[in-house]
Length: 199
Ligand SMILES: [Fe+2]
Image 1 (cartoon, rainbow, N blue to C red):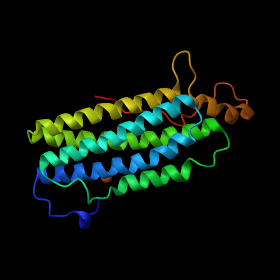
Image 2 (cartoon, rainbow, N blue to C red):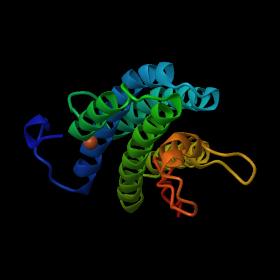
Image 3 (spheres, protein in one colour):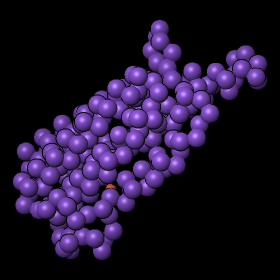
Image 4 (cartoon, rainbow, N blue to C red):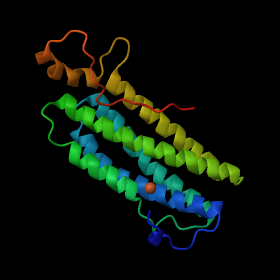
């Protein structure tokens, strides 16, 4: 969001919260428009299902954020989230020309997680502002959105990294890359799957 896009000058923390909610509302709308393309590109059925689930959540998030704006008496529209614009541009640039399906999926996960981390930062900060301002209903909405974003991030990490008995997409993607080197014990870089802690 650029200062010129703000419809009025910012005066206090409540004004700042309102502008951030409007920015997040636009961010979710942008992400909601991009997700169907990400779902259609995913090759792993597990990843496809997860991204479809994220798509539903993100559309609902936009409605929840519009509701929070309504509670605060500000319009939800009229602001563009420039950060989400950039994240989506990167997602479009990086998820198309990979040579194998596992690397394409790893790329999609890394893009989805960058966006999840942006959501977590945005929802978490706005929730902290709402709590300080004693805006209980708005804080509750943001808490719910934050918890869902944390869960999505965790699920995407699991798909990327796997579990005790199931290899993740990263391992599948790494296989052709490490085989020709034939160097036992060499470290496999993590292509995606870095969660943030839900503390
Ligand atoms: Fe933003």
